[in-house]
Image (cartoon, rainbow, N blue to C red; front, side, top):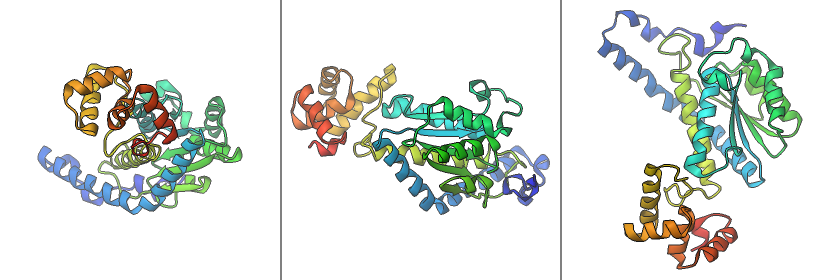
Amino acid sequence: MNLEKLTTERRNQDTMNLDELTVKEALEKMNQEDQKVAVAVKEALPQIEAVTKSIINAFNAGGRLIYMGAGTSGRLGVLDAAECVPTFGVEPEMVQGLIAGGQKAMTIAVEGAEDSQEFGKQDLVGLNLTDKDIVIGIAASGRTPYVIGGLVYADSIGAATASISCNKEAEISRYAQMPIEVDAGPEFLTGSTRLKSGTAQKLILNMLSTISMIGIGKVYNNLMVDVKPTNEKLVERSKRIIMEATNCDYSTASNYFIKADQNVKLAIVMLLTNTSKEEATEKLVQGNNFIKNTI
């Protein structure tokens, strides 16, 4: 295991004196390093595009998006999957995150869990993975056995596979049909991949989930029209979305929000097409769930 060859493990020559800096100097230096991340991600946009299109294809075929990783990488996948439910109104099964060591590994390190390829395979077997699904392995180092095991199994049953790593020529890239590699340089704090690597992974996950959801009709203009109003804040946001999408007043938005059984997208179509709930529902079915196809 030649960790010294990994960018994520190398010492950053610009931060050798961290323990001598003032708080202000350290913050400025960290901010300078963080600015390199978005630039590095930009270079990988063609690869990110290919994976995003594959996710859309999987969703349209009734498949699922499965993230898997260990440590920070796994936690970021779980976070992105969890946020898809309230943001886009999808079922929890549609986007899922697997982390080596299971749910307890979200807050406490589980020793050795990431070192087993078999664990990666078994976690996907437990989800009844099919060839309609897409599996995305996330590993800052690009060499996590848990992720490799999952990718190998997914490929063996015909599922689409992709990987996200923060080193060039990463080992996991050899096991993914669509590898994404981002090199943002050595970490601010040597080997602490929750920093620049974690930020790069978060940016990429934001892109993959958000753009793929746009691709299946979960967005109208730039409004999250499938938001689930699960609390008071989201109820008010839902009404504002209806107002923005239809140019109506608050009272009208509230009224149609109730008429549509708190379904924001349905309320918008009812207003834009001047139809009943049943007619609007049929329009959405015919329009493949895209509001613009109903107008």
